[in-house]
Length: 327
Image (tube, rainbow, N blue to C red; front, side, top):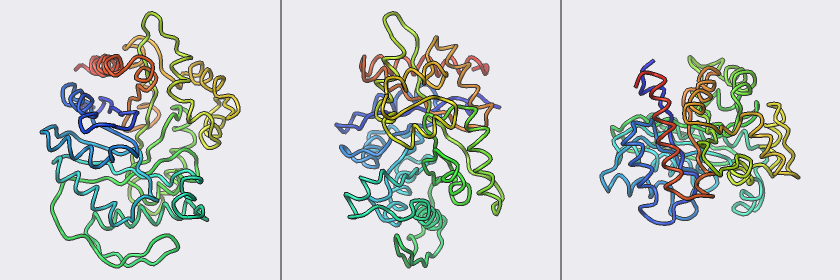
């Protein structure tokens, strides 16, 4: 396995507020040889436009979205946006999508999706077919389309979907290229998600890749990992679907007590804290569990100490991973 294939990716954990907000992270990816730059859905500077701005500034690195929300755009528009990023960057793209929280879906559509899994499967299948140059003739409960993209050559676009629990993993296994997991312990990936992905992929030649977002911080004087973990993950630790996933993974988490949930993240090793070499060693456990791409999330440090401190941690961890593999 080459160093390039084992170096982690980098997540920008906050929504960009200015055109150049992503630039320091993109320069870090380019300078360290990290695998990819990821962002989530932004309701400030729109995600695809932020990446396009980077490309226009001459910083062209592989990018991924973890995740953009399906209710905001028709699958045809999603495919155009994803392909445009591949064309603008000249690099492979992971176009990751998520159904969105029930309240968010209701705010846009007036009602929640009757079957989020069906909606996701139809959406991902349509985006993948369009990117493959196919003519799509689909009339379903969630979208309709008769058409194709205008043919163009472009770098590879993988279609991904956010996955936390086995049912969505089975859906992803049947239609997606990448299952994007967040805060999922390595044992849970290996023992619960991978079997579900493989079950969903039984009609396909290969299973989709797994890309996992991992909370990290380097141990330094004055840092409290419990404070960092709560700062980073409190928003997820009050939701039913994240806490249910964590309990399935053996991490006690109750949406009524996010402080205790954050402590459980640290105590279970789900939130990685220690020297850069220690964090790098623990990241190897994700590889051993079957994760194909590890994505570093330094949100706790970013939100408590600022961007410079977060970039320092990310650089040290990436370098430590490289040393473990002879880089």
